[in-house]
Image 1 (tube, rainbow, N blue to C red):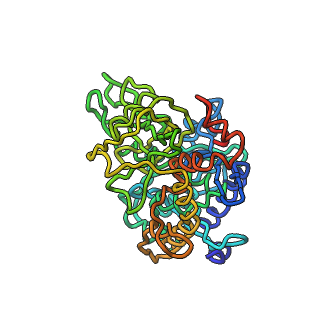
Image 2 (cartoon, helix red, strand yellow; image 1 turned 120 degrees about the vertical axis):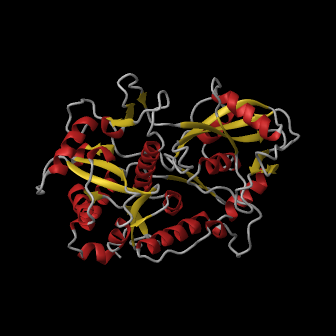
Image 3 (spheres, rainbow, N blue to C red; image 1 turned 135 degrees about the horizontal axis):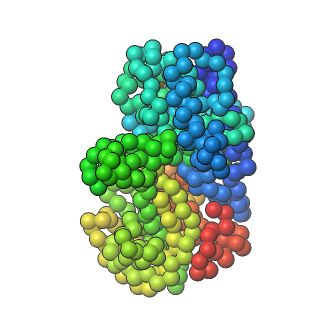
Length: 447
């Protein structure tokens, strides 16, 4: 696969490699830190999956050529140009189809034995020519501004091409594929800050595009909406209304409920979970409710457990939910139980149980998260080669002997994993990590 990209004369593929390298160099400093102990490895990310976007979404001055408004004006002029000449700033486009970003994959190189995926950025001129070849014209208002990198003089855009079915084989011939964002999430090596940065860009882009697709009409008067500020917001088209509409973010509390006295944690299962998977409680915040109140209410409603002290851990954007909820913001907490008898709401949960710290540790050690990541990376490579293979990632959470672990938790790409692992290994991690669990407020030291 690497030889294909390096030897290809296509400006599209070479542009992808060039951009991928630039994105990589700009996000090197957001490396992941690891804490090793004699018996465990606890993973601490400096930013969660989908956080740490390397692109700058706004500029200090509205007249800056890289600002959303000025960049859109330049973009529209470029679209109308019959010929293509190198000019500043440079525009790159990331197509999406049915919520799936365009991606490609390089064979594993260096110390990595698994393939490395990257986003399928296309130069504006190449994308325009590709659509023209298929008899379609590009419209400037259909592109959404993602941000810029001033040091590279590049502006990045996203576009939904779900209606352009003919694009799929054309891009497939260049070994590109539209890949589910969840698949890319699992396939991302959390030790690779460059890949984590690209995942954050893809998540941001999907959230914006999905919001655009569900906000075509004004919620106040019912008239059509029109994009403003290069797609960063919308406005009602009615002169009598002109309601401003901004991208939707749905806050969700997610909490690990802890029984201090008996050294155990409350974990739950939903019916949609794969077999043996357990996770934290979670729920949407209601109007007029504080975060802490939402933690206590959701815990009580779903399990009958009364919560006292609530301690903030960290937050994570979650753009991989249903299209009707394009971007959830997961706000993580430790919650300390005041009562201990469980009464499960069967309409919300399949089950909920107390699990000892030792059992949770064993499950974390048995689950082969790295194996699942490599399997997903191979799947992405196969899709980009045109050989799509159905793969159940849950089958990779096994013990070394090949026997199924009695339970497992979401992988390191999810905030639930870090809530659970932070508590499980609190006695074996840094002093800062231990202090966090004891303090009443404040953010987690590494996030």
